[in-house]
Image (cartoon, rainbow, N blue to C red; front, side):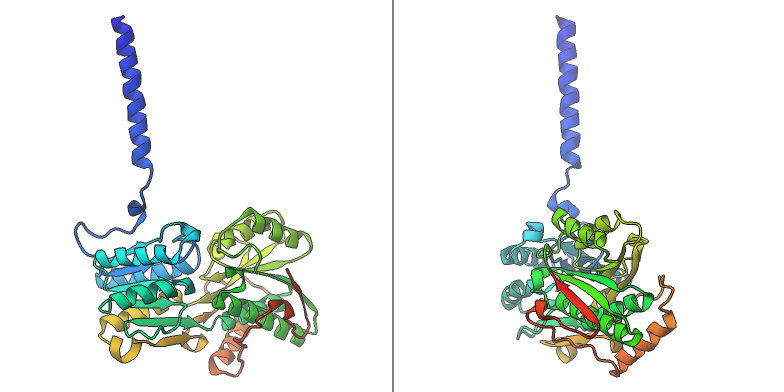
Length: 369
């Protein structure tokens, strides 16, 4: 009997130990945040947009810029992901910003146009805290500054490069359900660049164009199925324009040996050899620049209630050169076109059509889904 009791006790102890370890390994929300030294206020905060922090795109590029500036200048920082992930509400974003302020933030970097309502509410209540609205616009508040990008330039370069490289069956899948201005500029620029190259080469190009399944910028089986269908139907390269949506496009491309991808926001070539280039914007560099202006005491003179609209002229749009993998469209040709865009000789149109199903361009047949 005594032996049985001992065995039962050992089993119970082992079970409790395993349960405790499992509980310990389950990450809490606060344990997923970038921590500062014990007890030290986090002066720079990043409140992420929908999707994951390290999304290989917009959140990641913004975060890495803030992180680089903080590390280079010995300033504490922390990131905050609003509750409910891709379904985050304005109240979730407000709560995250207020938490950042409670933790000592003096400047908050907020990527994504969805942040507008939350920024306005929290910035109004906290006039001494500064906000950088990335991919935003001025909100009539002196403690808010905005960074906007000429995404149509990067999109144009990507579309032009794809056709010059020899692809004539293209696809564009965009996030935000057609309601995200930055994504819309990327897509419209892509179509314009493809049209310009097709016209020069005397080719006809097919472009499948869709915002379906991209409302939350998240990966999904539905999106993967759609894009796999495109590849099966002959589409050669797809411009994936929407954060974590990239994972669905990559999974679809993996099913087809010759399928290619164009990334967005940051250089995504490291994710797969299927990425031929990426339509990038200077997220990290521009965030570092504005943080530098703030800490140099230039907020009132240069940033208060101002939008900086950055493009090729400011080295903030383009294609990554260090990982160039195209063979027919050369780096020299790219640099020549980039220079023309920077000088204003070539000016991609930023005013995308309100109804993308009406998109019509020379030498391009658009199939809208």
